[in-house]
Length: 344
Ligand SMILES: CC(C)(COP(=O)(O)OP(=O)(O)OC[C@H]1O[C@@H](n2cnc3c(N)ncnc32)[C@H](O)[C@@H]1OP(=O)(O)O)[C@@H](O)C(=O)NCCC(=O)NCCS
Image (cartoon, rainbow, N blue to C red; front, side):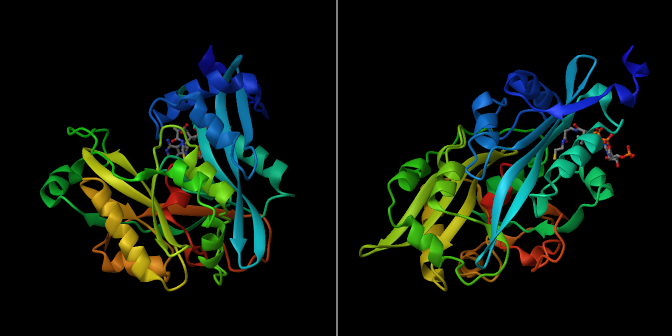
C-alpha cells in the first residue's frame, strides 16, 4: 500500500538513458507541458545532453519500482571580467504527486549538491512558487527578481488579454507571420559574431553567461520547436548588432520575447534600430525584454517605449565557493539577458 511506504524505501541514483521515457512522463505529470508543448524527447536532449557547457547532472528517485523523482542541474559557464566560473542551474525538478511532501525533492537536491560541491562554484535558478520554499530551506538565497519590460503594440487587444497571462488560456488569433531570418541560419553563417560578442560587455565585471558563437548556436539555433529569429545590422563590413527573439503565446496574447540585444559598448543607436525591426517583424500584441542594467541596450529599451512591469522573474542562488566577488547573491552583480532566464 503506497500510503504506508516510508522514506527509507526511496532510492536515489544517477539518471540513465533508458530512464528517458519514464522521466518525460513524470515531468509532464508534475509540470504539465513545457515551452514546446508536450515534452518531446528532442527538447529534453537539447537541454540536458547537447548543452555545450556539458551534459546535465541528472538524478532520479526510485520507489516501488517506479521513477518518482527527478533532479536536473544544467551545466553553465559564467564570466566575470576575465574569469570563468563553473555554475549549474537547478532546472527540471519533479516529484510524483503520490510521493510529494515526503522529502524526495530535498533528498535529490542535497545528493546532487554533495556530488557537485568540489567542482561547482555556484548554483542558480528561477524557481516557481511550489519549489522556492524548499530551496530557501536548503541554503538558497533570493538574489532578487529579474525585471521584465514590456512594449505594447496593440493596446486594445493587450488590455483585453492581460488578465489571461497567468492562466492556461491560449490565443484566439492564429500566430502572426514573422518577417525575420531564422536564428539558426544567421548564427550558422555569421563569421563576425565572435568579434561582436567580445566587444559587448567587454569591460563588465558582472556575472554573465559565457557567450560565444557555439553557445548562441545551441541556445537559439538548435532548440527544437522554439523558432528563434534574428535581426542583424551591419555597417560596411562590420557587424554592428544582433538581436534574437521568438514569438510565443502568453495567455491569449502573442508576445515577441526579445532574448538578446548584442551591440558594441555605448551603441544604443544600433540597439534601438534592432528593437524597431523586431517590433516590425511580427504583428504581436506586445514585446517583452530584459537586458543588463546600465548597458547600451538598456538605454535603447527605455527609449523605445518599453515600460517596466511589476514583479519580475525570481532569481535564486546557492553559493558553494566562498569569497566570490562580485557577490552572486545580489542580483546587481549579474548582467543577464532575458534569454538567460526564459525557457529553462
Ligand atoms: C516542487 C516539488 C518538486 C517538491 O517536491 P517534494 O518532493 O514534494 O518536496 P519535499 O518533500 O522535499 O519538500 C521540501 C520543502 O519544499 C516545500 N514544499 C514542497 N511542496 C510544497 C507545496 N506544495 N507547497 C508549499 N511548500 C512546499 C516545503 O517547504 C517542504 O518542506 P516541508 O515538507 O518540511 O514543509 C513538487 O511539488 C513537484 O513536483 N511539483 C510540481 C513540479 C514543479 O513545480 N517543479 C518545480 C519546477 S521549478
